[in-house]
Length: 299
Image (cartoon, rainbow, N blue to C red; front, side, top):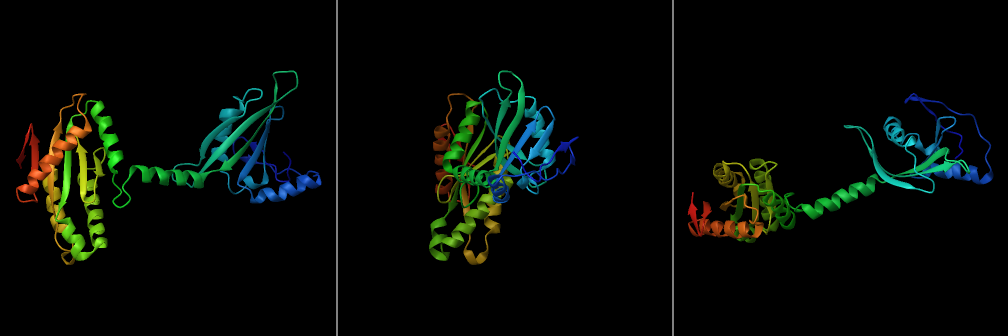
């Protein structure tokens, strides 16, 4: 690689400008085009111990972060004919960072096992990574409330159950939610669901799990012993936080304990918590019911 703005990394920080090089017409054209490219090219010569970067590295490449990465691979170069493909994050905590796709290859002296130079390219894939994070979020989280969606919540709870985790599964249903939607409109109903989601995450913070499994149905898995007191706090908060002009709401909560036995599964717990929740509704709503064997007791 040739270029007017070749850079050398000396002692990890010093950069030295090189004099002009002679270009062919094609080289000169490429040198101009690369200013608009999202790909940085580099070459390290083993004999001179010099690292050269293409012109567009300046201003978009964190040099100290890149050197840490490069030092890892310059003495562990790809073998003859091998092209190493990796993804790296160039940046430090609290600073802007770039995700890069990197490809590395080695030039070898003909007929020997001596590496001549290490060549590679870095392509900025930060926007692709952000898109991946957005898609992952959409796969795991409920778009309205930000808590786990039905599928993701079930998978996370199953993981805990397989590990023999003892805990509580809570089923929360908003009472008379359809009346709120019909009387005040779906935007008002959505705002209420958002508030309930935030309240649940506040009352049951991580590592507790909070999910939404239906229109106005939420679920929680917690390992805390004071689950009953937390559930009471939820009932109080749900009653007090909703503005008067958008009606009043309450919640019915069903709770079942997990035994920690490996044969126990999420669907069984969900069924029992659901039965307990309906017992709370049948008893007048705005209540908490605990499932015990085949029946549910009101708290």
